[in-house]
Structure formats: C-alpha cells, structure tokens
Image (spheres, rainbow, N blue to C red):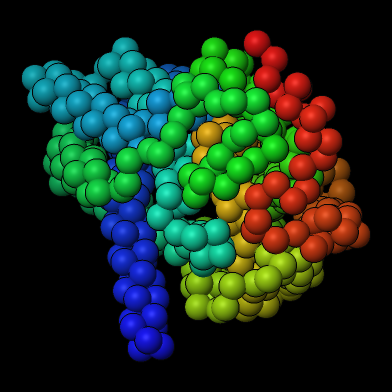
Amino acid sequence: MKVSIKNGWILRQSSEWRRFATYLTGMGLSLLGSQAWFVALAWAASQLGDSRKMSWVMASASLPRAVLILPAGRLVDRWGARRVTLGSDAARAFIMAVAGIVLAISHPGLGLLLVVGALFGVIDALHMPALGSLPPRLLRPEKLAAGQGLVQTVQRAVSVVASPLGGVLVAIGGLVWILVMDVALFCLAFFILRSVPEDTQSTSVQFAAGDVRDGQGRAQSLKICSSRQSVMEGWRFAWVDVVIRGVLVTVTAMNLVLAGALNVGVAQLSHYQSWGPQGFGLLMAAFAAGAVIGALLISALPAAARPVRAGLVWTALGSATLGGIGCSTSQAAAIASTAALGITMGPASALLLGTVQARCPEVYLGRVMSLVGFSTVGLAPVSMILFGQAADFLGITLTFILASGLLALITFAALVNPQLRNATVQQGDTISGSSTASSAICEE
C-alpha cells in the first residue's frame, strides 16, 4: 500500500511539472517573439531619420500596454485566461503576417509603424495578465513560488537572447525577417499552450451569494456577480484580502525603487565612474545572472511555510546590496553588488507573486495580475524620472543610499504586520469583514 501511494505521488508530481514545463516553453517562445519585435521596431523607427518620429513610434507601442493593462484584467477574468492567451498569440501572428506582406512590397513608413506598434501594444496588454494567470491552473498553491522562480528564469534567458537575435536578423534580412520569425514563434506558442487545461470558471457565471469557489473548488466568503460589473470590483477584492493587498502594495513600492535604480542609476554610475558602456553592460548582465541564480535557488529549495515572510527577508538582504552598488568605487565591487541584488530579488519576487497567485480565487486572477503588471510596466517611467531627478539633486551615491533606505523601510513596514508576516498560501484566512466585503464587491 505504501509503495502504491508513493508511486501515485511521484506520478502526480511528474505530471504536474511536465504540464508546467509545457507552459514555460510556450511562454518563452511568445516572449522571445515580443522582445525581438520591439528591437526590430526600434531599429525601423530609427531609420525614419527623425528623433521625434522615432519617439512617436515607440510610444505607440508602449503606451497602449501601460494604459490598457488594468482594464484588460477584467476581460481576462470574463473570457478566461487560456482563451485570451491563445487569442492574443493568434492575433499577434496575424498582425505580423499582414505587416510582413505589406513590407515585402513597400518600405516601412511612419503610418505603418504607428498602426502595427499600437495594435501590438493593445494585444500585449491582454496577453500579460492572461499569461500570468495560467500557473495556478497547473501547480498546487505550495508549488507556485517555485514555479515563479522558473518563470523568471525563462524571462531572463529570453531577455538575454532576444536583443542580439533581433539585431542579427534585422542586419541580415531587415524587418521582414523579424516578422517571419515572429509569425512562426507565435504560432508555435499557440499550439503549445493549447495543452493548458480549459478554464474551470469565469466571471460570466452567476454564483449564489456567499458561495464563491476557486479553481480547486474551495469555498470563499465572497459573492461573485455577473460579467457586467466594473473593473473596480477586482481591485476591491484585492483590497479586501489583507495579504494580497499588503503584498501588492509592497511589490509596487519595490518596483518604484528598483526600476529607476537599475535602468537609470546603474547607467549614471557607469558614466560617473568612467566605466563606459561596456561597464554598464557588465553590471546589467551581472544583475540578470544573479536573478537567474536566485530564481533557480528558490525553485530548488523546499516550499516556505511562511512565503511572505521569507520573501521579505530576501528583500531586506537586497536593500543592503542596493546601497552597496552606489558606494562601489571599483567596477568589480559594483558587479558583485549588482549580482547580489539579482540573487536576492529573484527569490523575493518569486515568493511574493507566488503567494498572490495561490491566494487569489480564479475568478479574480486576471484583474489581480493586471495590477501586478501595471506596477511593473506602468510605473517604471515614473520610477526612472524620480531617480534621475534625485540623482541630479543629491548625487548618484547618495541617491542609491536613499533608495536602499526606502527599500529597507518598505520591508520593515511589511514585516511588522503580523498578518503579512504569518501569511500562508491558503485562501480566505485574512478576508477582512466578509459580509461587508461581499456587499462592496457586488455593486452593479
């Protein structure tokens, strides 16, 4: 009997990770196509010979994603994450194919680049929360942090490969070659991700008051209304669960601190220390390598019983390394500090986002993941502007120290909250005022 139970457990584990490996493959192909396209779009825009036109083209691709990612979460919940993921991959393949045909018989003009960039940005706004909502369908709650570690590993690997691959293809065959590759990649991603299980429910289903069930059939103390409710409903749910609210606020604050430090601060430090563009590239590569190591580390370690606490401890360690970057006077020390920051922030984000995915009922997952996506892509420009202004006023070293202090303060504020510090991946154990929450969430 013990042998049969053990064999059944092993089969379940292998089947679970095999499905997730299929998801990672489809996700990686889709991300590779997206990032290669943005490289090609930037190159094509630079050929217009006008910096203003180039900025319009790049804004046409990035602004729709930043603006629409929040309302897109509602559509993901309404239509289902799997359906939106497959539909967005198919739509992107179609757009790339049409653009390739047009470019084969003409030159890329401003109008074409604006239209294709905007359409791609709109679809990307749907694709991001949909893709992020799929792991809870494939992994048990206690495995989601490890799954997020693998997701981040794939994302880092793709970011390393996509830019040189896009540059080489553009240099050899022009923009058309990128479009042909993207059609193939998005089609492959479509067929691979078709193996993801069907959506078990969507918000278009009417549930009885007080009887909400997630994808594993667990009862929730909230009420789901019809699909006519506004996008604000999902945000209200995220606010009602103390843990989800606390993690989202913490992750948003972390992104505001780190985006500017990494994208602006590291470049300014390299210039200030006369390390040149090669030095900047080495620092960013060190962070990427460290993030991959950290993400793989959290995937290999046993599941944390208190994942939020563990994630915040990793963040506290990261705050010290962030200050170390700004205080570095040698390139070797800066590289070591930047790699250490990646190693610490990889597990931190995997544990925190894995907790959000595990605790969120499936019917709200698209809207909640759209909040996560907005904190990453929507607020990054704000962080860069703030860090740049602070560096001009305070100096680069003091600004890094200030950013380090802010990150430590954010971590401390979260750790002193006992509901966050002791949170588990179980849903519904920190819902504040369930009867009040139900009436608030179910406004028509």
